[in-house]
Amino acid sequence: MSLVRRRLLSTAAAVAAARGPPPVRVALTDSAGRGVFATRPIATGEVLHSAQPLVTHPSRSLFHEVCYRCLKRKAGKGDDSRGDCYFCSDACREHAEGFHGIQKKVDWSLLDDHCSSRGLKYPYMVRRLACMVISGDVGADCLDILQPAQLHQGTLIEMEEEFELLKSTFRKAGFQEELTTLLVLTKQWYINILARIRVNAFRIELVASSYEDLLSSAVASVTCDASVGNAVYMLPSFYNHDCDPNTHIVWLENADAKLKTLRDIDEGEELRICYIDTSMDVNARQKILTEGFGFQCRCQRCLSGD
Image (cartoon, rainbow, N blue to C red; front, side, top):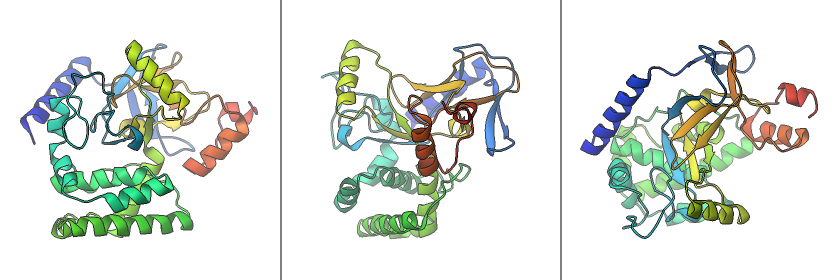
């Protein structure tokens, strides 16, 4: 582990200790598996906790405009953009040194063409995670605690095709021994990871922190590219869905997530976020949640037909 990364982790631990534990706990719900519950009354607008991502990846169209690690947007001419991707700081460059070093040794042109032609984004996250495992940044089982998506036969066939392409790409770069030793990039590992990323990845849309950011965000929205990338988290992934949520997740400058309450919360109440656009009508919401997340929403808003 690099000196910079150790300092970042120790600083984060010190800050967390000073603030005390977040006012939430993870427990089983009656009908939706695990959920997150309040351990005390919580006021409207309170920040419940923050969360750093386990794995991220920039949007391909913004690859040189957002930080390769933390997804922070490029702010101006003074930022460091050396090399094949952009880093917003030396700290991010140091943190990504291991897996980025692995990734630079591989020719990704076939995988890039495959994903680009099919509009795929999650295989990029599996690729990054594989590089993180090979570099020793994480273990091969780091996402096993997360809930997997329900996979259809057609989806499994597509995953197998992507797996073979990714495995052969690593092999051509000389990483066969590492893949075998670390038990990474077996077919089961790939399907296991991708199934969890598919249902737990958050689409990161940053809150504008300056007038220039506001303009770039407006342009991105017009061109249907408001997302700076995707990220997977631990605790935020345990929040269940509600079309009328009492909690929401926000991103300010980068992919570090903040969970905030939308109204007063009672002790013991389940905290829920909305996985989709709340402005859609009930039929559109049900379709997206069923096809994309594998469940039929039975929240009070959907049951009332709103």
